[in-house]
Image (cartoon, rainbow, N blue to C red; front, side):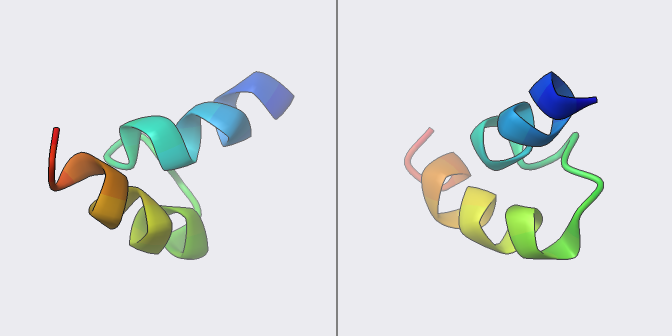
Length: 31
């Protein structure tokens, strides 16, 4: 589970946490 949370901000789309998705948006934008 821990790894999944860490991948949240990296993938963003797979992030089950809303907060993580928000930060992932900035990282996923340039991707």
